[in-house]
Length: 110
Length: 112
Image (cartoon, rainbow over all chains, first blue to last red; front, side):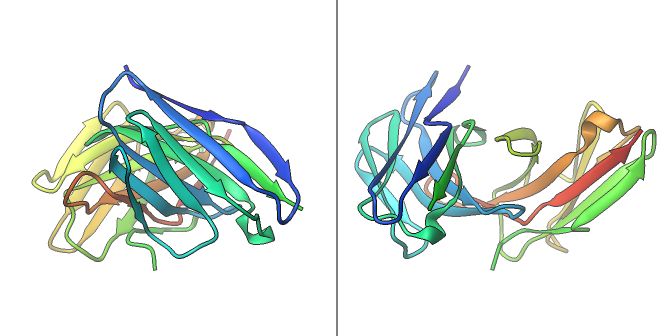
């Protein structure tokens, strides 16, 4: 079965520092991968999605970037974090119609 | 704005009652999915209904889809306190692979 791993689980970073969140997938090949952000008490905002290695689509203009260096690895990055980057970051991955969320990374930017 | 919008935003019921949540969306979809999120946790996939299906069941869950009205409903029968969570609908509108967009969710509280 498919499993989505994310780390770290929690991260506290100062404004202006860099960010790297990693998502990896087990149990499938060539998955579609997605990064979502969830503000407290709100729905999920799609940030990036990828249908293959090196293929990244950005949904909203922002301070973040994404990369897919390997088939089952999806990385969310920032060169300089803003206070507004705080939130719960969720990776979604899998085959079309059979997708799973990772446990999420809670990011607090101070 | 979000593709999917859930209604109501919050719902409080007694254990044993049925809970109904609705979702409306704007564009054509490939499928619609319902997810559950316990407070502070990741989302768990509950059920997927394809655009050519009208109703689907999974245990105590019943999902309907009306593509003419661009709406879906999630019914949880005989609710339990453990059903307390946020429920989100997600519409798959991707053309080259799935692309899920989520609503703001319905916060369900089941009182024992």
